[in-house]
Amino acid sequence: MQLFLDCLPCLLWQVLEAARMGSPDEATQGRIMDEAMVTLTRHRHYGSAPAMAQAMHDIVKRHTGLADPYRDIKDRDMEAALRLEPYLTRFAEAGPDILQSALKVAATGNVMDSALYNDLDIEACIAAELAKPFACSDLVAFSRELEAAGTVLIIGDNAGEAVFDKLLARVLAREHDVFFAVRERPIINDVTAEDALLVGIDAHACVVSTGCAAPGAILDACSDGFRAQFDRADLVISKGQGNFEALSEAPRPLYFLLKAKCPKIAHALDVSVGDYVFKASG
Image 1 (cartoon, one colour):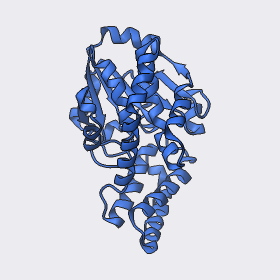
Image 2 (cartoon, rainbow, N blue to C red):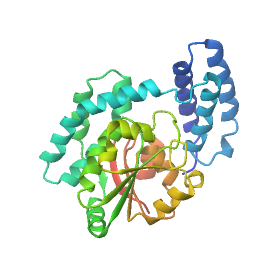
Image 3 (tube, one colour):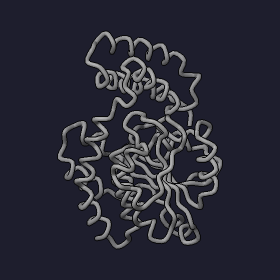
């Protein structure tokens, strides 16, 4: 998906946030922002928001000397999500269709960031989000394909969300081989192999790296091994907006599972901002 002009101020604000997390020194923060603003002027050279986000966050890492500026944030998110795991399990198992409930749980994990950053009652926030139905759902088509499938590849999004994905992986793993794809290296608060193992998703899925360190699985930047796995998986579930931006024009069918958080993404999906989507590509 193309990089929208609307993405530029969001990326700049995100870099400022990361700069402040990475260094208390205002001079360092200023140098980061100076370089980030120069990078913004070259936005036409980037094919998608995830590609530009990687370049912008590399600036933060270089100036702060931190390979993972969001480490504390990710640890906090995962800890909070793990406390919710029993509640999420009860929600999924209480529903009439455990697959649909597990998909909704996984999609709802997308809200972890905003809930925690705003110091909300996380359990109440998640409960309210779980009660919202999918605005768009291709569950019937997915269920039909699942019956004939042997392997399912889930492409993960953020670290805290991986706890929510673990429930989906557990449901799918009852009859399928499940793979969970992570970022090659830390980028923003996205899930890496280390994070996936910390939340225990490896009990239900084989954790694999995309070989890409952007906040979205940009296929041209992924490893040959992951590209082969992506191509041969019977079903692929792409989690979150970053992966949607990276994979919206992927050369194979897949399913997007996310909450539409901005007007441009919502428009592309033909839904409203805040809606939950489980949508087949194409």
